Image 1 (spheres, one colour):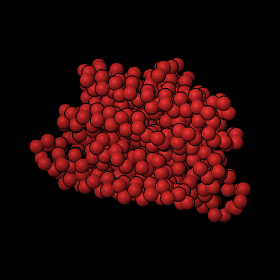
Image 2 (cartoon, helix red, strand yellow; image 1 turned 120 degrees about the vertical axis):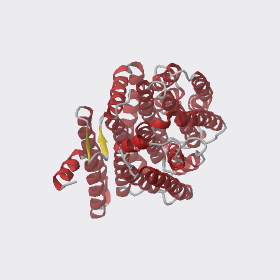
Image 3 (cartoon, helix red, strand yellow; image 1 turned 90 degrees about the vertical axis):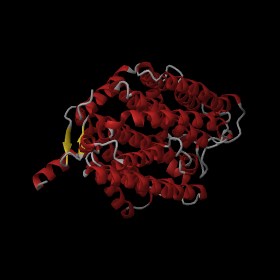
Image 4 (cartoon, one colour; image 1 turned 45 degrees about the vertical axis):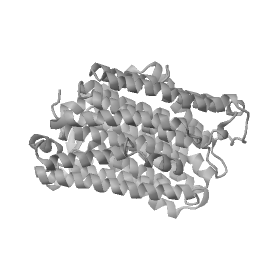
Length: 487
């Protein structure tokens, strides 16, 4: 690669560069300003994310590649980048009031969210394993630090250490799998691996198994889901909301690229494995969520179950690629909106250094904060898949793709699990609407209200009028399939 091509490729990754520069600016400016002026870092972070969002829109119209094909800047990557940037933007808005109420440091927090988002964006575009691993580590290291960001909390410190140790372990497994695939194929590019794939070579099979294991850990799916509840519960609630949607979506983005571009020669094998993983993930996540006494922990197990629902679409893509892929992509977008909203309500209700995390903490909220209670109800209905919310339409598309691909039993298991989940989501509303007040609720937080209003309207409006957002997912899936000539 000559210098002119390197310069051209650098310009093509403008959204990622914008976020990286913003993160650096936040870190450099942070120690130079004092007191109330540190709040300006919030606006710097939002401007940087907005610039990245605007630059990313161009990729829906002009898909290309960069760095000799290492990154694919197509509609598929652009769609996932929308999830990452919108999630980071809204999580940043929710974090402003939360940071003040919990007395946390400001600058590093915003910088880490931005750096993590840039890693997710690299990950969604990666078409070779070195870029893939680089994106994973940029994202993961930032989230490790964010998980333990509340240094005064023992649980937060424990969450950060656990995530670091277990995440490092999964990264080692992933890297070993990459090494085996490289040893068998002599290349790290996904399209070349697919062209040379030899299913009888044990190196290929072992490498594929290890790589999928690493992805399953990042997704938080069975049987590597045990880390999710402890880390989600210990991390600051806004961080939990951000990583529950961002890290999961990024892991699914690269899972889809690797499976359909690199490992397409053994589709039947990984499809059967993921069928089992999906069924167990949905079931275990929902059954465990029923018995939880902490809302944060309940939503953590709920997150595991939703990973299983998304995997239904991955399996269904074996029978109908465009419908299956678009259903997964749309589901992750819908999950970002409704799950970030649920955690956003918990962040809004946190006060004086204490998080809102138990059912008693929301008791009687309807009487003192009716609009917040309505927003919480909408998010719970959406997570349960009750119409007319975006969660209903997203689940409908995923289960429909499974039925059309003739995975009837998987669709039935998914629908039954969705019915089970309604119990613990509605339990939240019982406490919010039907119990007496047990705590003094916090003051009005205008910045958080803006984010919660956007998320609430989005959850309802995109459920009532879903077709435009669904069409965007269809186009993005089509762009992905055209990249490597799949039908």
